[in-house]
Every structure is written in structure tokens, then in C-alpha cells.
Amino acid sequence: MLGMTTKKFSGTEEIYITFFINMSTNIGIMFKYKQGFTLLEVLVALAILAIALAAAIKVSAENAENAGYLRDKTLAHWVAMNVLTEIQVRGKWPALGQKRGSAVMANREWYWTMKVSETVDDELRRLDVQVRGRENGGAVVSLVGFVALTE
Image 1 (cartoon, one colour):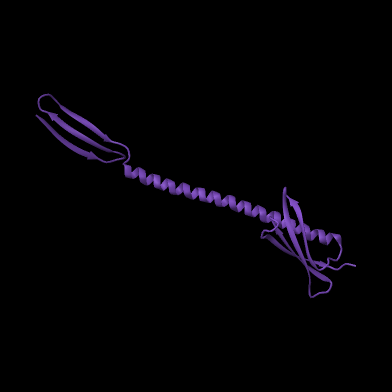
Image 2 (cartoon, rainbow, N blue to C red):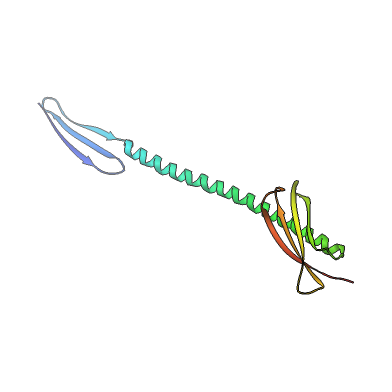
């Protein structure tokens, strides 16, 4: 004759201990370990991991895009400052109107447009410089400078 009782012990893993008594021979203990994760637990863990990795990839892509944007803004600003500095260093009174040109900065060609206009002061001219990455593209940077008449 065989009698059995089962008790559940909780901890880090569930252990079922079955006590059995074999009436004819001896008393014994049989251990059954329930190990591993259920399918639902694995799917939830994978979903959380997928969301976390997608967020990390998005942040990395945005960081790279922002770095390129800031690089272009900085280089275009330097080009605009060089155009204004060149006019100021020449010492010549700039003629009214619009001028176009290009400059190479960081192995890349930048296209600039400078509009020279009058101000309230007759001995001062306003210089509006716009720098583009492509010849017909939108302005990356706009910079305003002033030149005084020197004689």
C-alpha cells in the first residue's frame, strides 16, 4: 500500500516535496523542483527589452542628427563671420546692393549672399549675410554686421 502527501515550500523557486510511504518496505522522500520561467514571463520580459532598445536607438539617432545640425550651424556661422571680417578689413566703403559668393570651410563649399543697405546714420552701412549649404537651399545662418565709413 502506498500513501502520499505533498507540501509546497516557497522561496526563490518552488519546491514540491512529496512524502510517500511504502507500507511494505520503507519510508522515502521524493523532491520535485519547478524551475524556469513561464511563456508569459518570457514574453513580458522580451516586450520590455524591445521597448528599451527601441528607445535607446531613437535617442542615438537623434543625438547623431543634432550633432550634424550643430556642426553645420557652427561652420556656416564661421563663414558668415569671415565674409563680414573681410569687408571690414578691406577698409573700402561697400556699395549698396546684393553680392553673392562661395567659400570653402571644412572641405565643404558654402554659398553666401550679402545684402548691403543704408542705415539712419549716413556714415554706417548694414550688412546682412546669409549662408547656405546648397546653392539654392535655405539659409543655415543669418548674420548682421555694420561697417563705418573711414577716411
